[in-house]
Length: 357
Image 1 (spheres, rainbow, N blue to C red):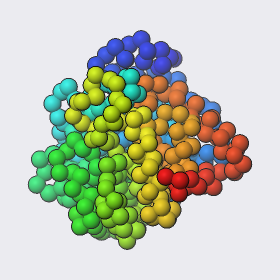
Image 2 (cartoon, rainbow, N blue to C red):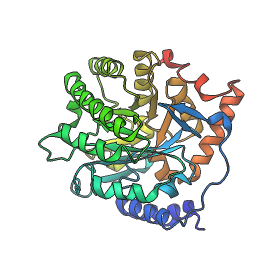
Image 3 (tube, rainbow, N blue to C red):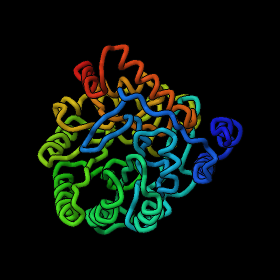
């Protein structure tokens, strides 16, 4: 087997970001990365929205947009992976260059624009990848030129619901014009209502009700936060992902690409996203599982997210800089922190620091 980390240091980082991404996926597809066979510590087990996770560390949407490496990614030790964002029709996304490393800041700026091969092609890959031997979610969105975004969500929902363990409604990418307007209360109510109706019909057909979650932006004002929490509670959503990339630019960014247009992810997003996470945990009073995303690059980061209110966490950008060995490091460190602090499981830790933010 090839040492993925060595490849990352010697080759992948010398390539342009998108070329490096394609190469990493190809390496995974060819099974050139040794699977992680060590079982997860039982203390990391977590049950959320009716699903049993061996550990709380998930791969965020965006890495495997087209479900090309589902099995090998699960074999790297993730508790779950999320494919997408997936749209009904294939689309190329925005013009290149559209991904920029901010190496000095441990960050990335992207303006990809939901580039993917379309729901039909991705559904076929998901069928081929089954059985998963792990939790697989799908992140869905509308085509850029869609005349009816709600119908786009419905179409993706219906096609993918029988094939994955949970579905995430992406209403927060900054790279699709008008998408974040769906976070407004009336628009969100209408969107979730129509998907709840579609879910009810599919559950009668397939014998199960797939968990439905939404992914929100880290840039929400107080009014939007209150509206989203209200809708989530009223509509009995199964979970919230907090949050997506940010359009803000912290003044301390050092990298030359800091002024590129797009969504910023990685280490500079940690404080903002964790503060929002704690705020939303308080607003829903811990009654809805939250997935904490944004700047997770260590076991300490993951532990802070959980203490702020996350039942699960996701990462992506740190994987670019650290390679897949980071997953095992985070899991072992997190298990040690939970045990050292005298807790028996993750659920006992969730949200205990939420009032400190």
